[in-house]
Structures are given as C-alpha cells and as structure tokens.
Length: 204
Figure 1 (cartoon, rainbow, N blue to C red):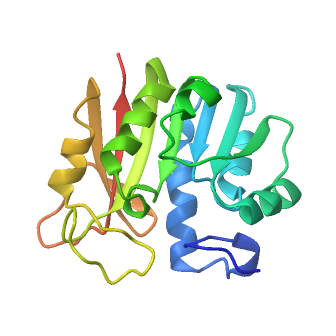
Figure 2 (tube, one colour):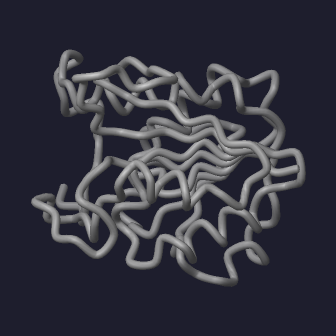
C-alpha cells in the first residue's frame, strides 16, 4: 500500500500512536458541529467519515468524503463503508467543485491547507461550498509562514497563527482553538508551544 502524501490508516497503527490520537481527536472535536449534509474534504482513508457517520447518525443526512487519491478512496470504500457516506475523487482546488458537489451544512477539513499551493483558492472553494448558516471546521499545523520552506516533505508551507486567522477572516464568526496532542484550548498558554490550530468558522 503506497499512497502519496501523508495518510493515517488506523488499522496499521498502535492505539497509542500520537499522530493517530491527534487525528482522531480532531474528528471528535468536530462532531457537535455536524448536521444535515456534510463534506469531509481530503478525507484520506475514510476513518473520519465513518466515525462522524456513526456518532452523528441522527443529525446527519449525507456525508460526502472527497479526496484526490483513487487508491485511498478505494480503501475507504472497502474498509469504512457506511450507508450515509459517499466517497468521491476530486481536486480541492478545482474552481468547479462547488458546482459539482453542491452546498453543505457543515464542512470538515483537517490538515489540508499545508498541502495546497493556493490556500486562498482553497478557502474560496470552502466558502462557496458552505450554506448560509453553515459551519466550517478547519485545522492546519503552524510553521514559519506562507512561502517559507518546511521540513515536512509533503507540505507546501505551514502558516503562522496570524496567517491562519487572517485566512478565515471572510467568515462572520471565527472561534480559534489550539491543539496540543489530543487536547484543545481556547487561549494559548504562555510558554506552551502549540503545533496545530483549529478554527470553527460560521457563515451568516
């Protein structure tokens, strides 16, 4: 199994794996915001879609998991099939994506921004994909900033906290959280380094 980019495959990892715990925590964090028609963009192996569908089966009408990797989607269909989940192959930067997928009550996008060359276009797509009154839950690792090199081989760049917050500025309400391991805090504590930011953005 050789997929491009970074992929979390829970069945191949120990339950105590730190990266796995961080990724699972983000999906658990997002569950209260899930309702109606939901999009998980860059869904990877599909474990998160399955988690959300099981946890929010009463609130959820449909969950669309999108990824650009056909092999990852084949794995998702095989290992994480659910009657309310549909997996589709698409490019997150495709300007036609909103016309092809329609609009959603909630959108989840975890650890995607650092992989796309044009984060502004990506956020434009997410804004257009979100219904008025809808909620976007988006996360990204912090780093040296847009256009700066990173030690992660699959990352185009890693935004600063200020750049991440600015990128979410078009939304009517933004709540920023800081992730450290599997835990989240509203306000960064002095002397603590936070590697991941997660924003909950509401569109009026």
